[in-house]
Amino acid sequence: NIDQFLDIYRTNSNLEDPDWLKVVAPGLHIFRLYPQAASQYEKLIHLYPSQVNWSMARFQALKDSGDYNAARTELNRMQSGYTLSADQQEWLSYQKRRMI
Image (cartoon, rainbow, N blue to C red; front, side, top):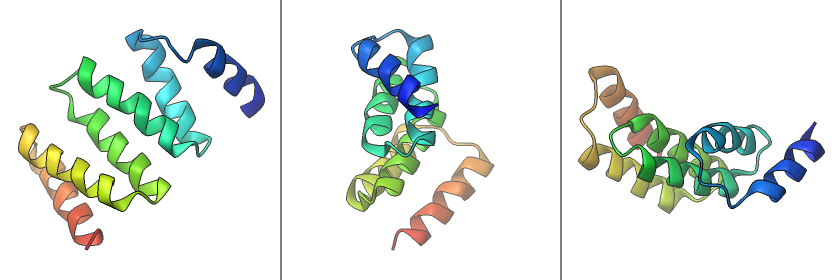
């Protein structure tokens, strides 16, 4: 449940272990703790700079939190910082249109 998850998160919130971050970031997102999820996704972006999926997840957390300016910034970072597949480029273009 969410209380157990949050207790574990709070106890281990300073961990930088990639395996931990890969669990905690989506968990925070699922429990609608969007700013915290975005922060953890940012750590994953720095650990895995060539993997666009963490940037995509961070965008969604920022958008879900209502931080549309930061979400737009993340979309721009994805566009300029990654080599995107055709599907990823299509998704990014769609998201940009929706953010107008």
